[in-house]
Amino acid sequence: MIEATLGGVTLASACPEAVITRVNRPLAGAVRTEFVEVPGRAGAWAFDEEPGEMPLVIDIDVLVDTIAERRAAIATLRGWARTPSGRSQLILDDEPDRFWSVKLSAAPPMEDDEYAGQTSLTFSAEPYAFDTDLSTQAEVASGTPDSGSFAVTDDVDAEPEVVITPTNGTITSFTLTVNGEEVAWQVGVGGPTTIGSGQSITISSISDTVLLGASGDVNLTGAFDPTDVDMVAVAITGFPVLTNGTNNWSLSWTGTATSVDVDFAWRRRFI
Image 1 (cartoon, rainbow, N blue to C red):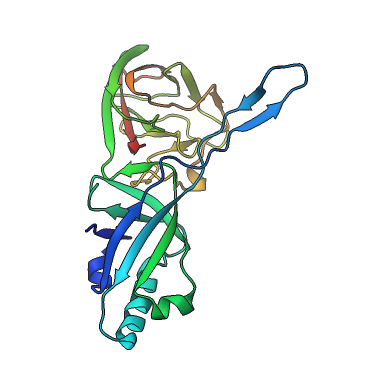
Image 2 (image 1 turned 90 degrees about the horizontal axis):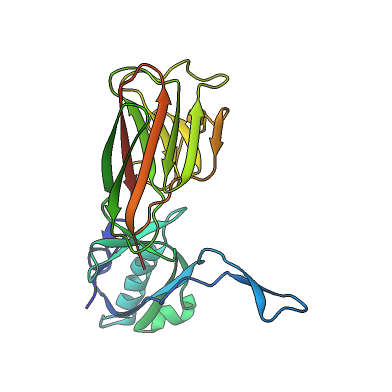
């Protein structure tokens, strides 16, 4: 038997009469690549796209003695499965180190539910499961420019949040390069004149933004305060992406700081 936890609530505690009999996890998200036939060319042009949503199906038996008890159990089950606005985290206890970001998308008709001992809940899930814990890497740039590297063992490329913090002086501009992609920032219109010691600039590859200060996005979902966005004087070839293997970074800056913390944080994704 598998136990499911949705939005922090286990099925066993929400509806003790419900027993999970099977979980169907598809192999991959929906294929969204477009193939365009071109006259005079063998085959087609392929326009690659990230995978789409996938159905995650949980089959459930409701074990009760009477129809009245079954109706009550089904009502409780329905309340557990209906996630609030937005998505919820679904953890299955055979893989307790990861969660699926899901939203209920289908269930059998209510009339059948009320009288049947079995039901299925179909959730629309993002194509990858996420690690329940964040991954972090702390680097220090000692003198401008400086560079380094670190290893990542993730199955899927990760979109990190990178926090730039001068530790013993100020910065007025910087250029961060990660795996060949460059983000250049400088003091802009309406922004601060300097970034002081202990203050931060956050580069979020999740939301494709540069933010003044910390993002406050503790769960790394891409959330941010629009008033913190500082993109007036930013030049970008691409936001940082971390890949399996060695990841190279470099940082140069202007200002009085002689060292700068470069802190990476990301949530590992599983195929």
